[in-house]
Length: 293
Length: 293
Image (cartoon, rainbow over all chains, first blue to last red):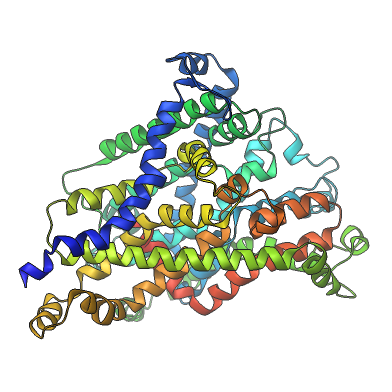
């Protein structure tokens, strides 16, 4: 039995194809991004080693820091919106009929491609024919905002479809976690006279703290690498007002052929995400931390 | 659900304030209903304008029914917009990637959970770290790698990339199920003289059918909606998948609302059909796939 289940040839046969694939297409490219980041390279011609010059340029690149600031804002918004999702989930998990149907309806936008969502919301925000401004003019607002053309609100305008898109995803996660809270504990608190709000705040939330941490990590990482919707809706514009790190990196590499500098930005993004993940995990980890269900 | 029953019981016990209870539960439903409405309203608006001509889009109220539904919008974009071809490409790429991913992931998960080998922890770690890699950090090296080996602008480049980048998530979802398969099962099979390949293909793989279905639908959604890789690796119009194809098409016909609407609805249709048939599997996959990180 043990001999058969530790047959090296079978193990190699079963694991090497997948390992090879993630090595060649994920890990080697990540290392190469670090390597290319030390080069001056247009993607076609010869590479020239320039040491840390790309990173020195990065430090004084205002356009990059502005994109990083937008990514950070996005992360703050996203974590903030988790509170909203959590509120809806608490309601959903509080013994309502049809909860299953509700959470499925909430999930629908999450299943659609970001490109389709972006194209749809481009129409929603259309200055004259979009449903948003048609609604605003119908209630008497004479000069509704030019959502995506206004540098001061474009980032907020893009954030609305993002909240919309991800709502169902986080709600089903919270809902599943809340449904896992042992009923006896909730009942005991109720008998002791705790109000629904107290039960939610003092009992349910602490019990799903592990899941909340995971969703914070997901929301922050997801925001830092966010790309699709912004690329399609505004292409980082107007005038860089909605540029984020990933869209900036993409432009450097595939529009202006700055492969070396683009790689430096890509590598920075990778390191940033690894550090942030580590920090959040560390900051929120307690002794009894075992996120499993 | 025992939860509901218990709560109803305690609800009956407390006769006082039953009116208050009714009122507060009405407010709860109002909140949930409002969120549900917000989640589907933009999609209803999309469906409506996909059946209108520009005249109606500009002049009728946004949510007015089309007076003369323009089904021809759909026929027109299917033929003129190459949507039929993009659709076929999406089916092809998605289908092959899903099969390849699940087969490779099942092999690996079997070896990780049922077989004994020293480096299994390390292999597991490699796959799990792959979960949080930002794709942009690997994009430039992948681009130059595919150019070098000559599969740029070839479906193979995106099929391999989708497979590699979806392996971690797929393995993670499979793991939970594989751990629950009783060891006695394979012991009995081996004692009966069953070879390890036969054990895997004839006994283990069929048992995992439910979780394979879950991972298949999740993979399908991700691949169908993927944008960055297709946008970067595929340049021939005849090879594009729906996400990038509709992006180009809409760019050219940006003033024809009906055509844009019809294109978007067509691109969402397979996902929505899958959703109506398999929503439980999707919810299961989304929760298990995200939370155990």
